[in-house]
Length: 374
Image (cartoon, rainbow, N blue to C red; front, side, top):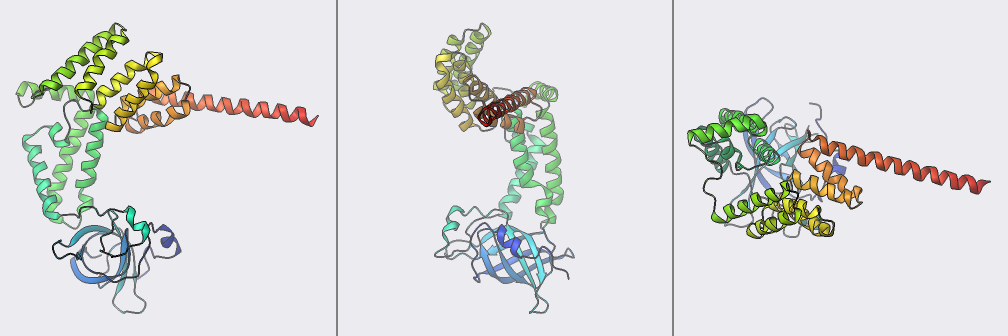
């Protein structure tokens, strides 16, 4: 058998945490290269926070997913169970019938119970182990939502969610429940495919403006879902302040909108939307620009996917003569919303202006050097 992804110097360079030559018992389960379910007791040859190397009696495919069980050093704590990808495999040159396998954890962490780990291990916190029973329960709960719930409930968002928030939740769920990530549990395949189809339909419906409007209207007519239902009195008061602020903005009364939006922020200080809207109103008044920047910062801290906050903050930074600081915010908007033409145009103009400035500086330097050389 030819070596597959053999660990040489290039593999050593890729290690991101110190390797220890230490034997820790572990149980490995998965499927071999022929597709047969396998489970074996073995031990590590070397290990770090990103994976380990061990001997195996079975030939597995590179990039296949395995489940590792590692005993805990504490009697009261259950065995760690986590997923690992086969990074490389090679036939042992000294031990006939055995393979050396190198695996990389799905999520790095110090799962080995080493008493005095290397210093660079400290940055990797131990994450919760993969629990098949809990995963299957969550899968069944989501399938139940596809039958009796709404697209909003399935994606875990509210009716006021932005397309960026919907996209973020969809991709998080897709990464977790995609059938390709659970090839070692063929019994879940049918359920996972049904869930992915439902998630894709919910995503397409809610990220397309017209189809979302139609869907909301159908829900409202059926009585299954009412926008703004069960809102607290505080939320209602905050939204009333928002409506008053919008009335002021339509009349270009920025001072009035600031008053109402300050009240909305007082009622709901953790609302990224209200923080961003207050920042936009403050930015319209030159003496309030510094305070506007603070509210944009807060809005982005509360919701890093708030494209409105990123775009408005970038505009303010440009007005303050700081285009290099505005640039990354425009880039974030484009990453979250690739079709945002305004952000693309602003980014193009910033790059063009910087290019002209560099050309002017270069020309000036050439003129100075030319005079000196005379």
